[in-house]
Each structure stands twice: as structure tokens, then as C-alpha cells.
Amino acid sequence: MRDSNLPEAELLKTVLQPLLEDFEYWFARSRTFLETERLSFLNKQEQSDLLTRVKVAADEVKAAKMLFTVAEGKVGIEMATLMPWHQLVTECWNVAMRFRSKQDVSHDHD
Image (cartoon, rainbow, N blue to C red; front, side, top):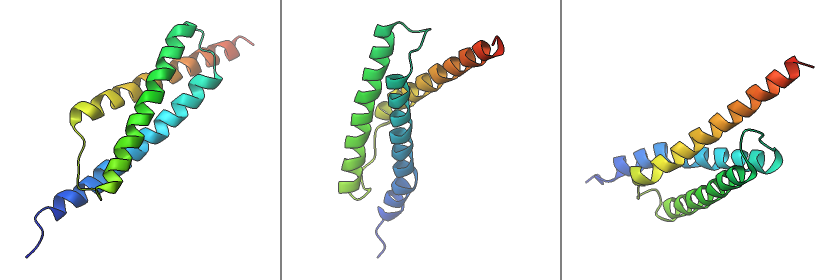
């Protein structure tokens, strides 16, 4: 008899594992960006707060990924957990795009 949970577990591994890896990647890039660049359109406290939120989310993703691995892909993650991560990644993308657009404008005037 076939294990009825297998397709669901395989689906979780196929979808959730790469998603967690994407979050890890984008949070690592965002952290580096926020630690190395001074963003003129955010005050220091706003930039520090964003960096703190990125660090916390990265730790949460790491913990979720470890749990997912230990459970051999047989546990999911609630959408209520994933959505704030997605929103934070989107916020970081927007900040990076804004930074780049300001860099392009300043280079146009050189």
C-alpha cells in the first residue's frame, strides 16, 4: 500500500525547501547591503530597525529550515509565518531599488 502522505511530503520538499533557501539568500544580501551602505532616504534609526528585522527574520528562516530538515520535509509552515518574510523581502527590494535609482541620478550629474 502506498503512503498517502508521500505526495504531500514531496510537494513540501519541492516547494518549501527552495522557498526557504530563497528567503535565506535575500535576507543575507539585504543584511550585507544594510550593513555596508548608508541610505540617505532613511534616517540611521530606520536603517538600523530594518537591519534588525532582517536579522530576526533570517534567524526565523534558519530555524524553520532546520525543523523542516529534521522532520524530513514532513512539516509545513503556516502562511501567517511566510507572509511577513515575503513582505520584508519586498520591502528590502524596494529600498535597494530606491538606493540604486538615487545612485543613477547622482551619476547622471557627474
